[in-house]
Length: 76
Image 1 (cartoon, rainbow, N blue to C red):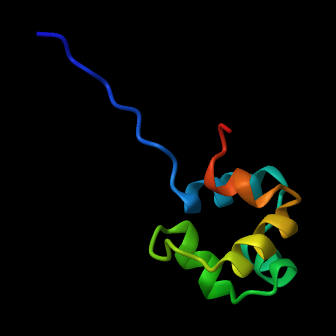
Image 2: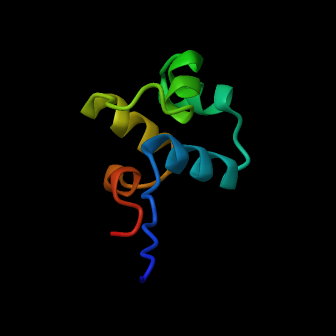
């Protein structure tokens, strides 16, 4: 029997956390720069907030200096 390994895709929260940490930003700094609540960033990174509005997604992307598309599809 051949075992198939399925690589789980990264969640939006994992992507945001990795980009934030790569920029040496705290959650509070990202929240302030993106003009969203700190609790929102905390929940997003924890995977408890999964569907941000387009406006919030754009704010977070701008705060991280990446295109919004990169948050949804880091490989593309």
